[in-house]
Image (tube, rainbow, N blue to C red; front, side, top):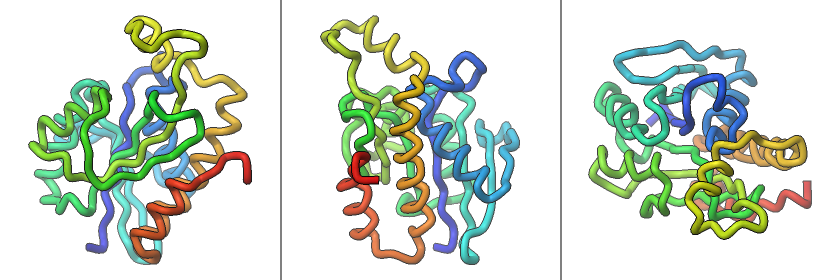
Length: 200
């Protein structure tokens, strides 16, 4: 169990680089940069991959290049190739149902309407995997039942004000991921779920 596999969800392509739906990509790029590790494309894993060590533990990061709605294809390929115990797997994903700056760590659960998680659940045939959800908030003054407005919100670019908040979120999630091998799981879950962006 000296390895951790962290998959950030998002869409490949320049037009999506700074979109709210690409929180998973952005967070993992920050983590990889911190350890001077670059992402390289591995077609057999349908992902861009980065690998480095923290305190003799190997961290493998993945950015699927399948597009969000087919994230499960990449996750299935990664799980099969490395023969991963799902306890070692962590999915980082945006969540429109959480307020901007809130974090939720869950060890299992439904997709909550998120197409990336839905695809993963379908391909793994289980809801029992770790996921770290980062709130992006709902569209302002728009009923979220309007599908077009929801799509335009999640695919819209992160504003400078949002970035200030999300940078704090990235810092906390990265710190918690770094502690996966040194702190008890309950501590990490509590730390993330009680995160308050106003206090930092």
